[in-house]
Image (cartoon, helix red, strand yellow):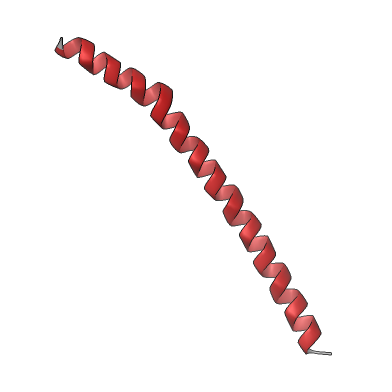
Amino acid sequence: MLVLGTLLGLFVLFNFLLPLLAGLFKLVLIVGVVALVVFIAVTVVGKSRSSQ
């Protein structure tokens, strides 16, 4: 029973949890890059408008 439980736990870990965490990491990375681009664009536009 202990071996069966261990194998089932490893199955769940490698087939469900790790892909879920990898997907969340990719999503956070994409959102972070988009936020950085928006921040840089707003900063550049703000500086160009204030200098005029």
